[in-house]
Image 1 (cartoon, rainbow, N blue to C red):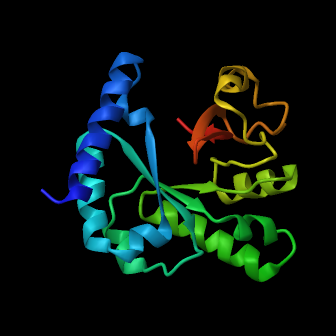
Image 2: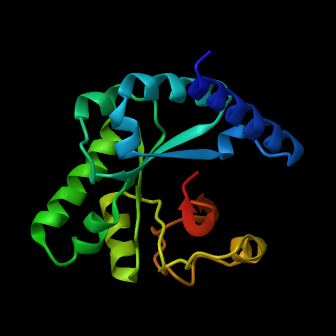
Amino acid sequence: MPAHARFVTILAAALAAGCASATCAPSTVVVEITESTAMADPERTERVLADLHTAGLRVAIDDFGTAYSSLSRLKELDINVLKIATPFVRDALKSSKAASLLTAIVRLAHAVGIEPLGEGIELEAQSRYLVQLGCRRGQGFFFSPPVPPHQIPALARRPLGRWVGSPGGFEQASLWPVGGRGMRQSQHR
């Protein structure tokens, strides 16, 4: 068995065991793979994703739109969440071209059964715009800056409604660990 296959097997088993000891379902754990990594070796990525899904874990493609995306590969990869890169979210309120691209990415994700998540949300207007587009997951400094692990439980208890005051906004707050840092994000049920 190649080293990368062993690593994924060990990672999936460790995450599943961690979920069992913490009494959480593996489907509540999301493993992120950057777009550039996923597209660098698509065949290997497909095998890795299959192993993660076999363990019951969910998978997100991070920074979508910043690397060399291939729509044909996107339809073949078994992913649950498409994290839309910050530049699309940041520039959507300033540029009609960026707004059109963001709209297209959100619609594309929905069309192929993948949940879109807007990254880099810094303003309430950005959050509201994403919700209007049908993107009900988000992450960024608007919700919280990165926090050390010991602050995560308190962050998870904070109500999201005070940040997004619209009834159709992000629904339930949860944490999405990113690069070892906790980031506030929404979780659509």
